[in-house]
Length: 261
Image (cartoon, rainbow, N blue to C red; front, top):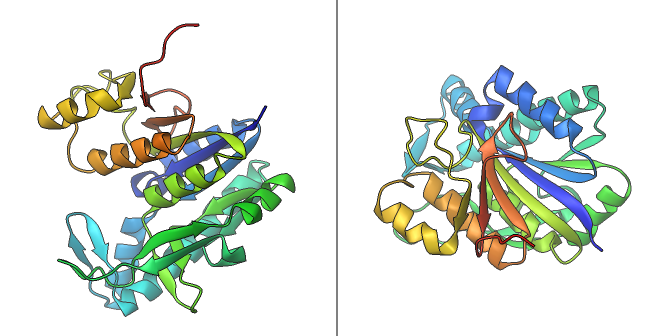
């Protein structure tokens, strides 16, 4: 039987709020067994960029990463945010180790090709170093992954944290019984965005298109669910979307509806 592995992705809005971050890290520290944390931190990077006089450009919620912005996100994601999270976890008794994709060649990517939009120094993942992550987990370490990868040619690349979490989950599935959790400020996928109690308990593939066409699922939740189904298709046992303080609850994404044994 495979060992269980929890991969938790914590979004920028949670990282950027003191109370939400501490709540998430306390919940994360209480999880038993093997675990990995993946974090964002976009607004912190934007704030520092403004102070440094580096222009922030976004298209459809995605950051255009110029050469100067790459320096900022590397400092913020790989330094300030990552090491703050690691220090907080160490205080909670978690033997965390902070990593970018370049460390131990954990995640290699290629610079996104220019099509309709030039996103700059943004990486599309090509390889997750499963053995490197396994060696850390076997040693009792808890990897904390920043949303940065590298191209093995000496260049760092800005990479979406949801994609990193999903890619890591898919790559590790042959070795572990993986549960992938995306956290946000919401307790799950809501049938009514104005009612936090309207959490949809499960979403199967057959439900996805109707939820999008009805407007129930929109904006940033669409790529999050797409990442979730990609992970399910690759063998990840289950994907959960929930709030920072409610790990284990929320909306469960699945290939087919679960049935009682």
